[in-house]
Image (cartoon, rainbow, N blue to C red; front, side):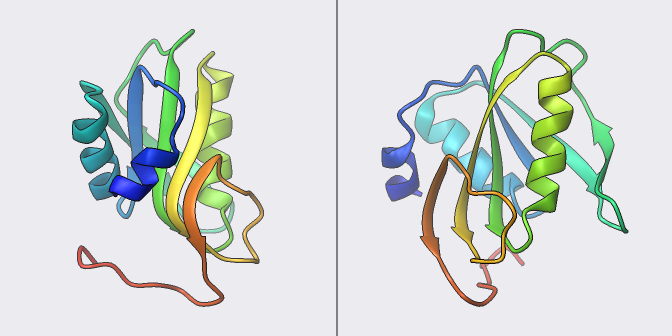
Length: 122
């Protein structure tokens, strides 16, 4: 997490973790970056990715760092980013690992792996 934080050269107002895998990395980044506001975005992952729960009402003009642990297809991150941007937020993305088949390259990430990596919180 220290290495990922060192790559983030941007100061968000809010850190948002995609439930479930992104919540722990988002929490750690929130504490390490001293960003007080941290929220969770839940997605329905059946078929087309849709937002199923979000706790913030007005995010217009806010800078949000959207966090996931690992991107396979990246569709959840794409849907989350679009959802937040449609509500007026400036969004950057971060994840620990990504795969070559991901449809999005996050703004900040550590490494790319050919296979799914597992984390202690799974």
